[in-house]
Amino acid sequence: MCPQVPSDFEEMDLSRVRTNSIRERGSVVTIRDFGDPASIAGAASPAGAAPLSDEAARGIETLARSIRESAAAGDREIVWMMGAHVVKCGLSRYVIDLLRRGCVTAVAMNGAAAIHDFEIAAFGETSEDVARNLDRGVFGFARETAEGCFEAVRRGREEGRGLGESLGRALDGGPAPHAAYSILAAASRLGVPVTVHVAIGTDIIHQHPSFDGAAWGELSARDFRIFAARVERLGRAGGVAVNAGSAVICPEVFLKAFSVARNLGAPFDRLVTANLDMIQHYRPRTNVLARPSGFGGLSVAITGRHEAVIPLLHSLVVS
Image (cartoon, rainbow, N blue to C red; front, side, top):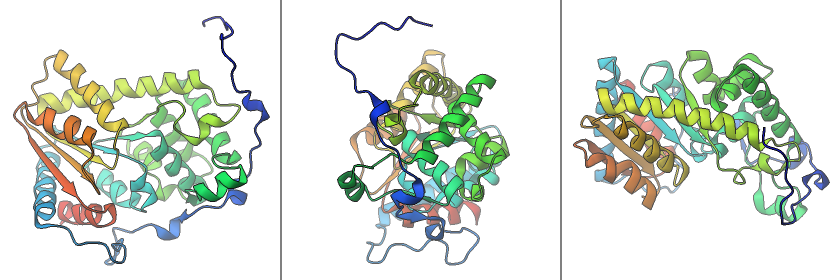
């Protein structure tokens, strides 16, 4: 361990901050808002949402066919990368059902997605009113969220596990009454790798006084290596990589894992990549679509609301 050398600059003393209960903070998303792929109604598109364009509809059909073919082949990877809004829009059970059916073989998410997933599983609610709680001086200080995540990481570090595996095992085997709604818990139960890629300072738990940056960095670094191994398989055997709603973190992580796999000789000539989002941001468009497709694969950009795109994609994959 490196010796603790004082910085030349003043640091915030986080022991001064006041935490509160998740029940006191209030949440704007609960399990009542979650769609159910087993229901005919599923997750309805939001009122007034624009219908999908013909191009988006064709893209979903192409992506669904590629996922079905990869799942049927048995030796291909189907990687699902995601941002927090997949959870916040109540779509987790569509991803869980794809995991259960073998139509997703690895999940990668940013830190925010993992925290929202953890809160849903443990408390049945997530996503606070940011403006209101900033005004009250309590945004991001839910005590139970931090304590639950920190204990999962502490235990996972002792056992030599990655970050996603540590959080998933804590939910799957612990007191999480709503684990059926959790992608992390489902992946743990099914033996599917789920990796969590954090950027220190971007997530609410980083502002808590007992946050251990060394532990979270260590486990997230292990997750990068786990994810890179899956991407190398993707490059050699072929398959599908989907990015759903991550504008920065997952596209950047994917590019670096792609670079590692190329360094080791993976050709990536049978890869299908897709970006699902309301708008096509620069990094997903470049790192997930343009650069990988330059090696001979196919890329699909699907623009639309998650609430419309993901249930439709699910229905086409499983039909």
